[in-house]
Length: 354
Image 1 (cartoon, rainbow, N blue to C red):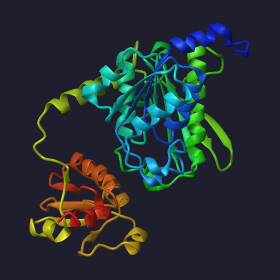
Image 2 (image 1 turned 45 degrees about the horizontal axis):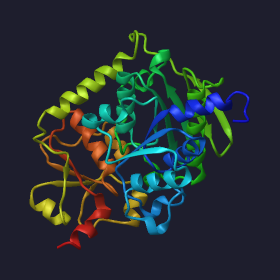
Image 3 (image 1 turned 30 degrees about the vertical axis):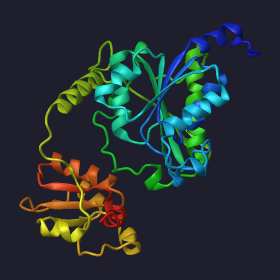
Image 4 (image 1 turned 90 degrees about the vertical axis):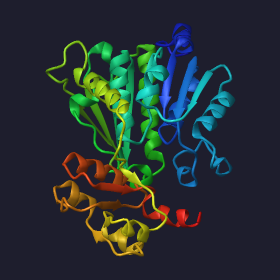
């Protein structure tokens, strides 16, 4: 309150603010810490993941003993311990088309702290539909980017820059590509700062621009985010995408993309051709016990075709890249292509259940 631009009136504005934070991981931890410490009146936490040991180097609010517990529950407890005056609401589960409008409605701000494209674009579309400002951040290894999408200011949304969301698994998230712990901490801190600037109406907030941050060279770049020329009033691309997603979820999916097998010989016995889409280095370090066609994901996405008469089971390390690649190949007309659920690393776990 000693800041001239904030004062008692600004603190009262924060106390009256309602902020939804989607994701309680590497980005979400610093966001929640700073917003709870600032005295935000209501925080809604949305996360469907459980804490894993590999998260701890970048999600430093948690402890090894917490592993296996839903992150939303852990984060809610930490917020209450830091500031008991915050009204904490939590949703242990993923944001989706069915619950999104209900969870994000009646908030002044939504902050995207997720690590997958599908949820980021869903948040974008929901924010446009609800007229709520959204603060986005993404992290990849040693760099990140930050963007504010404000429907009230007619700013460019994610779909103005990228009309079609990138398939999840095509670009590695923190768990797959690796990241230095402080990198998401810096980007999450910037998200919290931008959120407070918006709520307090401080100068210098991001406009129609994308801020990129290189943490190796300590360099920042502002890129102009141009609004789609066809959008009037608000971003029509996002509203069309949201309606399309709602319509698709209403349809019955008779052809699942993911299949689960206890071992690869079982998949072969059912007539599937195995396609290992991992990189050569990954295959050398952890080869499959069953012979498979090795085609790196990049080659498939770049246009390499598989014979259309075959039935294919794509295999990666954990199932994320293979799922994204399977979706892309389905879009190109290859109907009988599937992803191995859990990937190669999940096979020993399933065999242990037998």
